[in-house]
Length: 41
Image 1 (tube, rainbow, N blue to C red):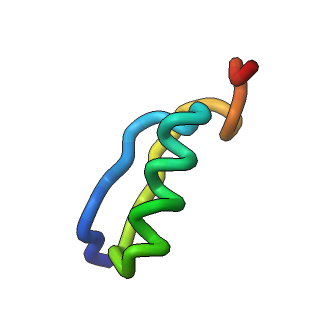
Image 2: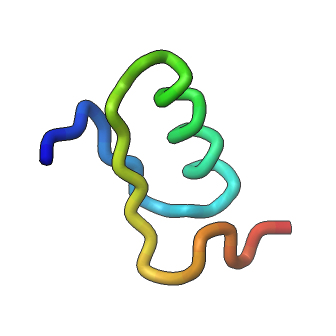
């Protein structure tokens, strides 16, 4: 599989960065070692 961007970290900033990039038409992979959004306030 090929991606345009790899976002490392699934906190609030990583999730919304990945979302923004997907909405702009890029292929994005989001890498997180724990649960997505864990530690987010």
